[in-house]
Image 1 (cartoon, rainbow, N blue to C red):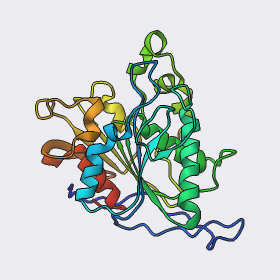
Image 2: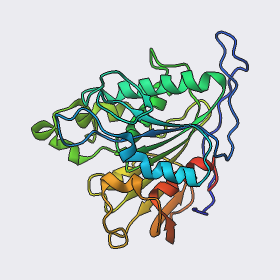
Image 3: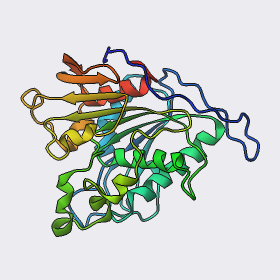
Length: 291
């Protein structure tokens, strides 16, 4: 577990108490807990343009086991958004494809969180991989901006984004010749979607963001840290992380590795025995502000 101390910059917004019509559920307390519901957001479907889905447990099986071993008691939602997705217990859309906008997926996620938890005063956590980090960013942005057709508020206490292209990825310029899809184009640096998203978006409860990236992730690199967040973790040494790829960062649950970490506004620090990416993400969800 990372031991550096940080004070999150988010302050919980004031809400009306009770659940009467027109009134928001009371803002839940921010606390350190392992009983929070967690939404697991996987990444882009993949390079095959004729594929219709993927298996949520291929993406999240190791993390699911890690949460079991850590006695995490909160419900786990493995989110699907493609028509052919399997083993995803929380589908967002019927018939979603790679041409479904990330903004639409963010809106669907926001409503899922609101209807299942926020409207009864329960907050949730999110852990994401790759494009899933943009869906989390979109969900909170749309509500924070009071976009038409979005829920009135949501309570997301913590988000841990592993290898999320928050600054876009030049890899997405391969869209036109090889993968001409909406989602791919929206991941380009400077896309209309990325310009729309808020930097460090905050839910009505305040949201503590942790960004996790690695030098060995040649698809995303520093874009994983390209958002103003309270916590950033970077794995700099490719020789110490042999075999790590963009696709498997969220599946690495064991071992110790050199890492740089920053708890804003403190200066970055270095730890030769840092935790694995999936464990850092889980720890970030446990601590509401300090870790």
